[in-house]
Amino acid sequence: MLDAWGTRPAVLRDRYWTVLAYNDAARAVFDYDGPGHNCLITYFTNPRYLAMKQVWAHGAPAVVAAYRADSATCPGDPGFEAVVTELAKRSPEFATLWARHDVGAAAQAVNALQHPHAGELHFDTTTLTLADRPDQHVVLYNPRPDTGTADALDRLHRLRLAPPA
Image 1 (cartoon, rainbow, N blue to C red):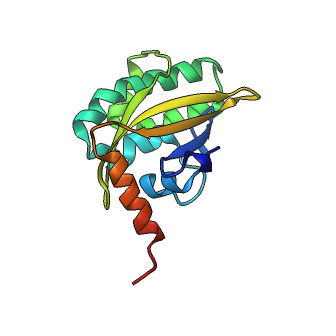
Image 2 (cartoon, rainbow, N blue to C red):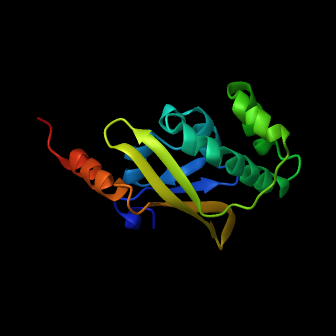
């Protein structure tokens, strides 16, 4: 399913938002070099996201509220606590938002980042829960219309396929 999403990024993550698998487009867009990246930690620490200050600041409260909602289904779960503890040490912005105790359901969201070769990328993200594995979720990134993201992904895809000079 991830590979079938084509030149658009797709990720499989667990309940803690840790990446289990991803397609080639996600590797190129998010600079993944293997499984184990945590989407929440990445959102708050990766310069690609932080470079999009206005979009990032607008989305950060909803991202934290969605993570809190997910963690509320497993109170006291050490996996959630480990992510929160690590990220609170690394990001004062996260610590402030987490202390607000906002809870919100995950919804279709806008995800934006600054890619070093493709420029600004803007996605609508949709999270799907696997019916037979409710602790796993597929996140699909669809280029936002009228942002140039679809064309940038096509260019990035062609760059990756081009033979070395």
